[in-house]
Image (cartoon, rainbow, N blue to C red; front, side, top):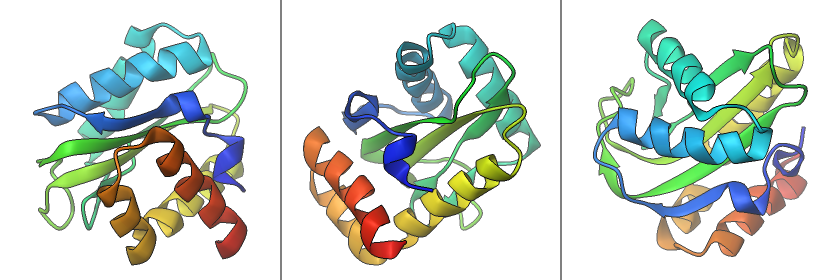
Length: 153
């Protein structure tokens, strides 16, 4: 699964200013609402409900908040590079500065898991993560995320 299948250039927040996990999710849910045509509140509530089950901060400064919604028909993503790392209650207790939000239809099953695995693989690549952290150019971030798929597939 290619990240270019779930991410568009207008779903990139290259320098998000946020001071809390809740604020990050709220800002990203607003962009996701534009991408999916769903109400912002539905997305926000779904993601917060998922976070209550356990943090989606996977370690090494990376978080992958995700949720399933019956109202969408295809998997969609939003990526944010935070200006300052924040506490995301990550598994390794490290602050987070790279966030990839993933929304999937309730029927997505295996595709949802494949998308999560692909995102994690790309963001765990130390070279890619370093380049993402070094730029606040949305087009460059989009190119890094989608080009990595072609080389790591």
